[in-house]
Image 1 (cartoon, rainbow, N blue to C red):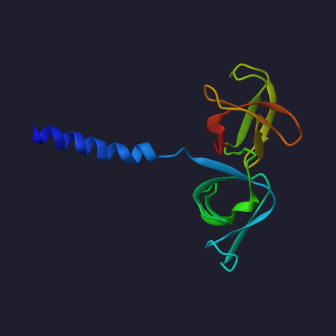
Image 2: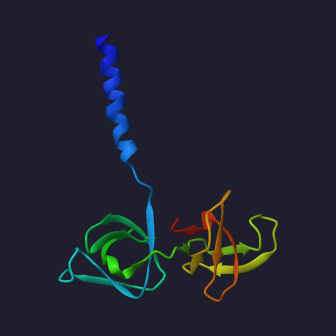
Length: 148
């Protein structure tokens, strides 16, 4: 009986971290912003990030967010510089955006690597609805973009 209780306690302890886990949060940059090496405007200024760039939020503080970019670099940004608007970054050499969410659908447009696309809906069966800044919309394979 004692062994059974220990097993139940161990299973409960292992389940707690999973219950507290959160989904990965991605946010886009609202306007040109500076990335810092620490959560302070007195920290070292590292890069300027362009508007629309998607970033993965790793940690949220009151005024700062620790973020990871598509290349894996981790830095700090002022939270006010982040938008709720969803964007993704094309990671393949050439992403084919289709008119429908199907491999045999007509091509809506093609996008080069590192182009930012606005997310216009939820991913479904490996396809993500997106819009180019020129206004052209379509569906891209989720494997060809980063920021989901």
